[in-house]
Amino acid sequence: MKIKKLLLFTTLLVCSSFSVTAEIISQEEFIEQMVTRHHFDRVELTQLLNQAKVKQSILKIMFRPHKPNAKPTPWYKYRQNFVTKSRINKGLQYWRQNAAALKRAEKTYGVPAEIILAIIGVETIYGRNTGNFRIIDALTTLAFNFPKRADYFRSELEHFLLLTREEGINPLQPKGSYAGAMGLGQFMPSSFRRYAVDFDGDGRRNIWTDNTDAIGSVANYFKQFGWKTGEPVIKPTQIRPNAVEKLLALKFKPQYTLKQLKPMGLLYHGDESDSTSVMFIDLETEIGTAYWVGFQNYYVITRYNHSKRYAMAVYQLSQALANLYKSNH
Image (cartoon, rainbow, N blue to C red; front, side):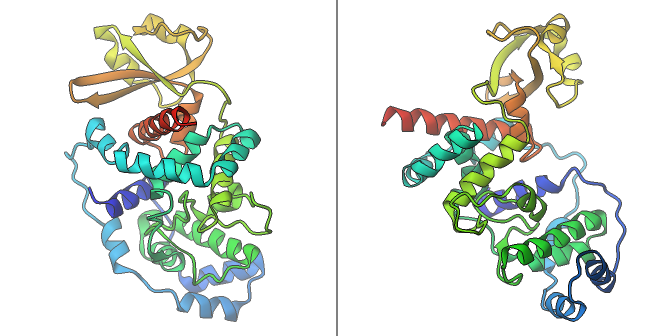
């Protein structure tokens, strides 16, 4: 799979959990709402949105026919796209160049440097592939031409216009993915407004070209979603042969204790107490299905992208980076 396609794929997953029904309103109605709610100038906003271009290439991606019997890429093939020698080497270089910011982010937010790095590495290869669509084009295209999720993208367009006003950014300039994700960490506009930070203290939150702000923003995102400093992310486990269906039927959330799952067939023998909350994870390897218990921190990674394969890719890339970096320092 090409790098560009990977960026588009991971961005699409950010939007995949939203309602499949939406109310389509016109651009003129949207402008009136922005004038009423946020006191935008009607003439200026009209002129701005008239400069946005409907991108047929984006609509082609979003309206791509769904294959009902298509199977997702198995984990061991998915992994090959992200946990690579090239991405690890680029990550080590990025770590050396931004060691001070990563160390400070780890101290400030309690999120390991390697996890922050792995997110930026998986999302944009450390800023090498942040997307080439103007955000204003992407969001107006989807807000007014994609009924399935128009309400979601209209909300993101609203957030985008607000953040450009707040940050003093020309709305015609920022670029990102086809779905409107931005910067080194691929934040949607609503996430930018909630979680982006001015980590270098220059008065701006710049996640596009400022590595320090991008690093701090990803770390803050994880902290706000409940990252637990010093606690595990995911560990392998065994199960009883007749326990698979029962365990896989559980919700994709760490709301079950080890004490609850062990009688259901979980054969986990780690050091954690039986009161620890976990989630059950299965992933397909080259030699068959393997099983893990995911902890709160694994779930936090899935708040970035709601995929067990994505979260495992981030974690394994982070471990590869940490092992090599720490062995050389």
